[in-house]
Amino acid sequence: MQIQELRKKAMSLPKTPGVYLMKNEKGTIIYVGKAKALKNRVSQYFGSQNTHSVKVRKMVENVFDFDYILTDSEFEALVLECSLIKQYTPKYNILLKDDKGYSYIRVTKGEWPKITAVLQKGKDDARYIGPYTSSFSVTSSVDEALKIFMLPRCNKSFPREIGKGRPCLNYFIKQCSAPCAGKITRDEYNEAVDAAVKFLQGDSAKIVSELTAEMEEAAENLEFEKAARLRDRINSIKKINEKQKVAGSDVKEQDVFAIAQAEDKFCLSVLRFFDGRLRDNEWFIFDEMNSLPEMRSELITRFYSMGRTVPKRVTVDGEVSDSELLTQWLSEVAGRKVEIHIPQRGRQLELVAMCRNNASQKLALSMGRSGKATAALDELSRLLNLPKPPVFIESYDISHTAGSDNVAGMVVFKNGLPYKKNYRRFSIKGFDGQDDYASMAEVISRRLNRYMEEKDTEEGFGILPDLILLDGGMGQVNAVLPIIKAFGFDIPVYGMVKDNKHRTRAIAFDGGEIAINSKRQAFTLISTIQEEVHRYSVAYHHSKHKKSMFNATLTKIEGVGEKKSKALLKHFKTVSAIKEASVDELCKAEGINRSTAEKVYNYFRKDIDNTPEKMG
Image (cartoon, rainbow, N blue to C red; front, side):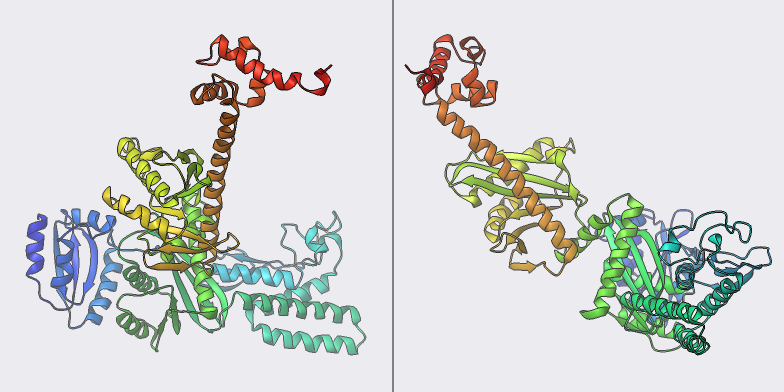
């Protein structure tokens, strides 16, 4: 069907809840969605395409027909949607790949057993504890146990390799008891293994209580070495627990969801907390589909449709579409009341920031980028309410000395990093004197004119920025906005405001300022950009000012004007080189005849001949 026919069919739908199924020419279901009012929702797809994301437009291009199922309520539509997506796995729905298997704790048999984390049971006589759904939790727990009870993590085989080498670094930092070097008896080793297995299977508070009782008994029996060993284990467990509190949650049971974006790619990170401790970390990368509130709703639904246990609280990093409906569905799945929480302050907000940073790191890794830069751009785009993180950022600064030698520097950051091949310098030509606003307006106008000339090259000036940052406040912003609009472009423009100590303080925009001190990653990025553009423009100004001073020196010579002065400096680079040149060498500069060369030569020799060494 054509778009017009599909729209006509959509307009005939009832305004009642239901599920719609988009199909391609072969009849394959490529998208499943739910709607509170089918007519309103489905007809949106076949109206103006300008409001849709790239992925939605591509989906609509492939729609040949659609079907629908009416339901009695929006909640029933949500339940049916989940079921149909699971059944058909449509191409254009957000599908989270569920590649989680089961993990086990493996304890080998023998006189010197070893403890490891494994992803599946082997066909051997080892003891397997599990299964556990979280490999993250198993791996970290085993690592903790080996450190606490000073058990080896190497591949050495005991007793075969006992006494055949020196202990490794882990022994010296008190993370291994070095059975390889005979530093521990077999009985002591087995006692440590048994205690580690108990620790992995039980509550750490209970283990500490049992170890404390053993320590006190050993002390009463004058077994001071054993008591000291038990004391060290207790202290290690307490230290591990303190570290976990730092990354832990003040809510006993919750999942934290956060999304990071880079260009048209997104990453969902989920931190899962049980007993106030971080027990699992999952992440998924996918393409853009809907708005962030719609994506959060769909992602949460998809995540718990994969059989994940629903906690009492689901914490998210922003607005969620149909949150009441989603809360009802989560409560139904969990069999108890579930809360969707958007934190505004405190520890919960810190956890959301940690989760989003984790998503940024994963996304950056998948795209071969810097994790810090990706996180900073994502935070900046949220701070400035941009549609997506900017790829190209251009920044401008004006530099002069009391209005003389007026110049501007333009620096470019690509994906959050300096892109020096696209740096440009401007010498202000439109007027003389000091006027930073007029200077900024001239520079932006010239830059956009160059874009119109070079846009087909898609290089240098042929690339339009996603964001412009000006060194200054609202005056600079207001000076350039009319110019950008006159060219017909919609480029976000903000000023970078400094405090009285010349440090970045805020972002200026139409209507006020945005404080950025609390946005650590965005603050660092903006400060770096501001420092870089200032350095670049000042360096150009100093270079030009130095040449102006040289020009002033040369124009004092009879017969040497501005043009000949520039010709001499262009040829010899410095005044010192001109001073040392012979008449014949001076004649080689463009436009310099022998008469002028002799005047230049004599002018500098006059100064030399009048020195004390040459007198008398």
